[in-house]
Image (cartoon, one colour):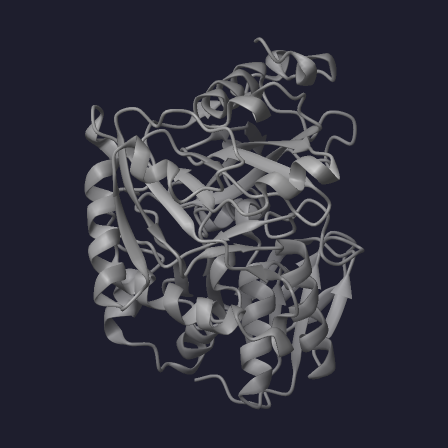
Length: 436
């Protein structure tokens, strides 16, 4: 069992890593070091560093629904989080023709009701339209039902992450920046530290690996590529005028569970973000392993490609505009101001990986966000800290185990991952093709 005076090295200063550092320090651990490949915090290409993320309790899984309620309660504390969190409400809709999203929505609704959330069923297009401001030009929401959870909203992800980074600093956490961990140091089969690309080494009683979508490709000898798949998710933004933003700012977040399309209200900078929550795009790269090179999906970001690292495929850009036209016709007539491929670390069942690597009491995994970890930033580190101390509920030990049997799939998403086509990336001109 790890002791409070032991040195703990956390690799990665994203959502999992920084929340874990915070909660360990709060529990009295005194020797916490966070190694981050970026030389700035938050890392500019980290998935958790973004203008917004949905904060919701609307999950079909009772565990995540309950933890979501706990996270919302924390986000509401403005002394802790300032104005990071915006409780706009969340509208979940699904097609009454294509039933793929319905069971997930039904289970989520039942869980929200059981937890005492302020929810309202929305049957038909008129009911859905009624929860949006009258000044907003909306589509018909034909063949759609859904519900609104008023106890949900969105968080400024970069702002929230920066606040927690500062909390860790204030509690005495050490940050080691600009170092890329490339190898684990082992003695008699147990991890005892890490080695970085520049040759520097850092000993530890426990190493906590929290490098998100880089998990499988950065340390291929762990053979995690079947459990940890890096997928790029397509995002686009629209810059509104101050007057336009005022009209849309009262909108709830909209999530279409049938297509995965979602839209945020405008940020304080008058930016609307749209995206599609699906199984995303892979970027298979040959990575050297112990025996022979293996192809592993590897994030392609503005760091690895400063020129085109933010570009998404043209076909994805067209899909985003098509979905936008269905729900917000006026916004669909405006040019996109930018795009981004946001990289997730996906597991086969959509649940996180939190626990010790098999047969190695010196290596803890805290990863597998599946695009739904950030909302839990205030509380997710509690689970990792419990796992470190050996106090995690046995049911959760099994639920999050690295080597668990994957019997379920992620019910919030449809489709299968497809390989990124670098020849199909959008250009600046494509962003203005409103009739595409």
